Image (cartoon, rainbow, N blue to C red):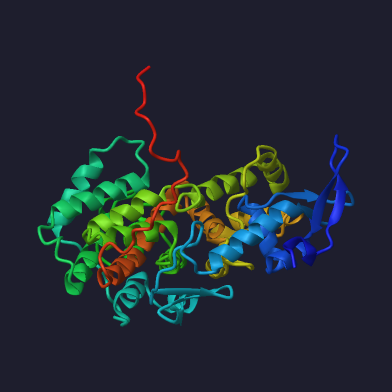
Length: 429
């Protein structure tokens, strides 16, 4: 049976044309794609489908051709065939995402983050063992080398640039960086993460670089003194963000590790990817959106302007979760206990409710981070810093796995679509 025969599509008249256009209802599109209706709207938010409101305004319709093409791509990608368009699949023991939950080495990640510090979760990801009370410290030579290069950067430099050059400087200060044995890489990880934090310029007077990593990081993100409840939110956020399966930056890390780049270089590869607005920098966009809503007092005009400009609404929807991002849900619950976060929380709820009138998308972790950063006097780039520092733990875990695999296995074949050879030599102009 042909794909188009599986549904009875609605028909709309395309303005200005004499031919009807095949349109599908949300239910029909979901059935054709084999997903929940919420996932159909997630495809819309990611730009994979376009939608049009029905004349009565009670739902959306979708171009049947677009839906059929997406269904074909999804079937091809899930078939496991190595052909062009198939997604890369990598065996891993680090993280599983399943049914709107995610797990670190089989243990619910949200439960882990609610009971253990970021450093303890990092150790769990790396070794499968918990080390209660563990904290990471860096030798003076590593911190000094990283601080010197960070201080030499222009004042307008972004957080990921600072972290990237700090990682390079720390590598240069470590003559044993090329040792890729497990113990050596673990030693590198326990030095690199606190070095990255210590290299960031402080926002308030600091009294040494000791204690939990979240406390040290706070002083480099906010000029306000932290309450214990706020530190708990930051530490939980670090734990929740420690890994998230094969995100784009993590894949870059595994490619570097496959080529046997040392751990500092592998982390640098991840930092090079994380700056994209669809990855680590998404929290900054949500932060600015939140401030606009707080300034105006209502989400409706702000959302309207974003949609009019053709921009996606940051902080909403996630391709791996049909419901609310479990990381956002956990952070919102903690933020509700902080009175200072009340206005930002209300603005975030307004954003979700207002957007739901058009597209039923749920809050993701970027919106939750925006509530934390906006209510704590942090800059919009703070969530990018939190994301990068947190994810370094997961990057190291994936690098450790990749060092145990066949070298250079991350070498896909290109699907050449250029002119058929042999072509004549080009003539100069």
